[in-house]
View 1 (cartoon, rainbow, N blue to C red):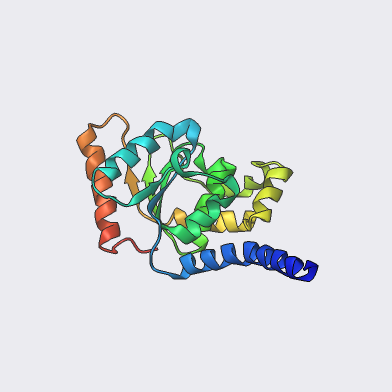
View 2 (view 1 turned 90 degrees about the vertical axis):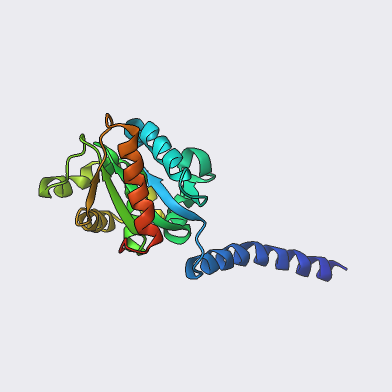
Length: 200
């Protein structure tokens, strides 16, 4: 029967649209999040650091840690992972992170959706001043800004998120420090997260 087949196809199409929305909504409002930690970093400046941080964290917890080279399936979904499926975002502050388009979106998605942000500051990071914020609109091309806007991230949202991020405590990371120091840093982040002492 043609009508029956058409109805079945229509129902399948409807389910393919509605089901992902329902799953995302459930994840957002349920207490369980897939990732304890999301490591936001600029690959050119902190790929090895991010891998090291993940390794150290996994020595302490069994929870999943999001690192894009391991977990990213679809770049356009990364902001949803941050705001829906992440307990804390650890921002590895290197010299170019605030000017990278996808890092900007990750940070903004976290800050604007109440995800706790942790600043891990390296020696090459320069904290932004008013001049930085004033020229931020020149950092990305119109097509990059349009891509971010299509994903719900406006330039003003980025500026607001960066300002809020800079009000949070900074945890120094010294690349040449002994591994024991790095382990203590990671243990401190995990401990505070577990005890709920990292306010968003």
